Each structure stands twice: as C-alpha cells, then as structure tokens.
Image 1 (cartoon, rainbow, N blue to C red):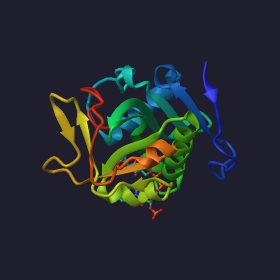
Image 2: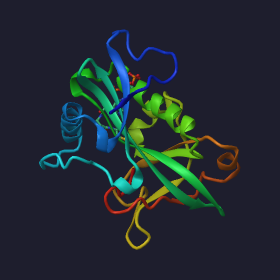
Image 3: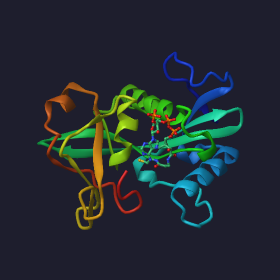
Image 4: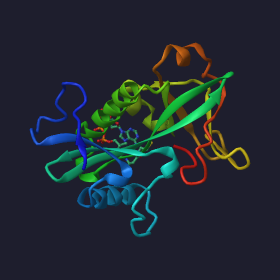
Length: 204
Ligand SMILES: CC(C)(COP(=O)(O)OP(=O)(O)OC[C@H]1O[C@@H](n2cnc3c(N)ncnc32)[C@H](O)[C@@H]1OP(=O)(O)O)[C@@H](O)C(=O)NCCC(=O)NCCS
C-alpha cells in the first residue's frame, strides 16, 4: 500500500507524468527504494549494499519522492522528534537525504521537493521544521521558503556524544520553518538547539 498525495495545486513539472509520492520509509516499494538507495549512494557513497532503511525507525522516517512514471527524479526523507528548547517541548521535523538524480539537476526538481516537504511539515501539525545544510546550499532551501536561523547551532548525536553543526571543519547553517504560534514565541536564533536524534541519524 502506498499513498499518492500531490501537495497544493501547482504541477511538479511541465511533464504531466511527474508526481509526488509519499510513503513511510519502510513501505517504499522495492522498485522505487532501489533507485532511492542509488541516488543516496551517488551523493554520499558508503559502498555498502542497501540496508533497506536509511534512517532510525524511532524517528518515523517518511519518504517524499518526485517520480516521472516509474523513475525517481528526486527524493528526501522527513524525520520527526520531540525536542526540549527554551523551556518548552516542541514537535520537530527535519529534512534528510535530499537528493536529485545527477542527470536531472538544475531543472527545479529539488526546489519543488523541499517546498513540498515544507508544506508537508505544516500540514502534519508539527511545531517546526528544522535541519542544517552546508552554507552554499542556503539559497537553495531559502528559495523554497525555508528561513535561516541566524547564529543557531543544531546539536546532533546524543547528550553523551554530541555532534553539533559548529564542530571544527563544518560550515553549516540552520534552516527552519516555525509553524505554530508556540514555536514562533520561542527564541531559536543564536541558540544551541538540542536535537539529539541519536547515533544513526547523527545530524538530520
Ligand atoms: C542540492 C540538490 C538536491 C538540488 O537539486 P536540483 O534538482 O538540482 O535543485 P534545483 O534545480 O531546484 O536547483 C535549485 C538551486 O540550487 C542550486 N544548487 C544546487 N546544488 C548546489 C550546491 N551544491 N551549491 C550551491 N548551489 C546549489 C542550483 O544551482 C539552483 O540554483 P538556481 O535556481 O539559482 O539555478 C542536488 O544538487 C543534489 O542532489 N546534490 C547532492 C546531494 C546534496 O548535497 N543534498 C543536499 C543535502 S543538505
């Protein structure tokens, strides 16, 4: 079983066969999953065979795929976790493994997908979407409506073995969409944000 859910009314491509598909990661059909793994390997080579799941099931990974017919053009995963911050508890969702087929880059597929992910985060009722990226990609995400949290540091890993975005050698920015009034009332910029997604997805 899988759901086919176009977000909003805008077409995802001039090509009429391009659709957005959404699945729990564990339920991505095998013929699509093998393509997703190949795309992830093309961007972040591990040399390992497909483990079947790229993420910690505790983070309830959901896969968003832009497909043309049976071909995956671009993919990303949304993860979810409750976080404590600024005296409150917030339901946070984050983007992970954002990738476009190298042969299809520069055609707007990635931008459309990260925009659809922002809409999905809002529709899910989460307090915020939050994730980090390398600084050169900031404009790519901003183009889809994600906003930089200036000076913010996202602390991944675990409390015992933290993995922050300001570790030496990293040049990362934190992007977010504050969806609820509660989230907008908290202070996020220039703060260390304890995400702590664990040891599998050390930083999303
Ligand atoms: C980043 C990525 C998903 C963009 O996909 P895409 O389908 O080419 O995206 P779009 O066509 O919507 O391009 C959007 C813009 O991002 C820019 N962009 C893409 N990759 C970039 C990079 N590494 N550095 C700077 N800008 C980049 C494009 O040039 C384009 O800019 P323009 O609109 O001014 O021409 C794709 O380049 C990719 O898969 N990269 C490898 C994996 C990766 O780095 N993922 C992001 C992890 S945070």
